[in-house]
Length: 358
Ligand SMILES: Nc1ncnc2c1ncn2[C@@H]1O[C@H](COP(=O)(O)OP(=O)(O)O)[C@@H](O)[C@H]1O
Ligand SMILES: [Mg+2]
Image (cartoon, rainbow, N blue to C red; front, side):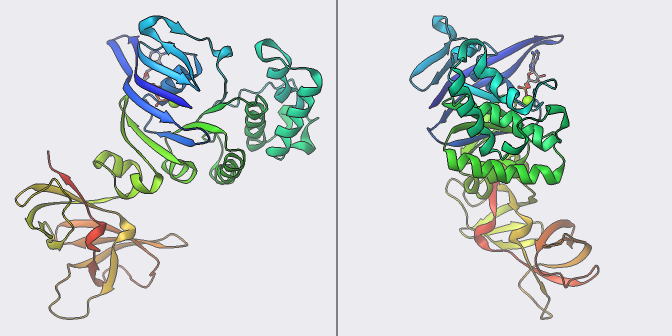
């Protein structure tokens, strides 16, 4: 539905030119919810604006459906209003002097996407029902909470009934609780409507929970594209693994086909293809993959440690554990350990990620 090849976009700046988007390839399938995830300044908004036609790319091509909408090499550039997309911004961009109804109706009543009055009514009512705002349709938009304003912005995008919706950090101005609520609401809506969505965020929870496909981006490039479970469990490199959640890192050297000699001793590890005995590696493991036990025997084959910090999180406990000179974070449902407790650590061999040390 959206196809991007070799997209580049640079901006002139005081110190020279900035490559905001540095040659990315991306495909969003029909009905797919695709999330572009990356830190601030990595080029997410620029990518979205190029797709929307608000920015002219320097190189590459963009197709929406079967239509080539941007291809600098041959001078093709379809203006935004002729692209079959709608966009939801971080700032809700709703008009304060209008009612909820009029805000949603506006893009359908004026300009290039104008439809007849009867159709406006049908679409606005339908969109307001989808976001559960029917009851408030005659309210002035200023009398709405942040979450309700965000719903108006969403309804306005939905009412356009475009092939593609682009969303740029639509939840980031909401407080934490509302954000959780709206996230679930969005998930419900988009899976019900199966509308093709490209969603931009720097929040890994949003990305993992909403996406059919996550595209991790940094410094203008795509680092990894995959299902949420894939990018979380099999991050390609250290950046991706840290950006998608917490990870503990250790250094080590591959000692045998199933063993790494690490800074906390010998560890049973599944060695991935491409790595061989003698390679220096960084080992990564997520806090929830580690299991703590009370040390049972005097001589144990498991790494021994001591709890240094215990943070109760409600549904789990985050422990900081000292193992030799290393500090590891462990997240578990077992709340029975206390600071200074001696423990042993159990690591499933397949939970480790190995990255070749550069
Ligand atoms: N209009 C602009 N003029 C100059 N530099 C820009 C402009 N828009 C974005 N940039 C720069 O391009 C890079 C990517 O920006 P952006 O796409 O907004 O990132 P993100 O949305 O991921 O935070 C940043 O370094 C930003 O400062
Ligand atoms: Mg941005």
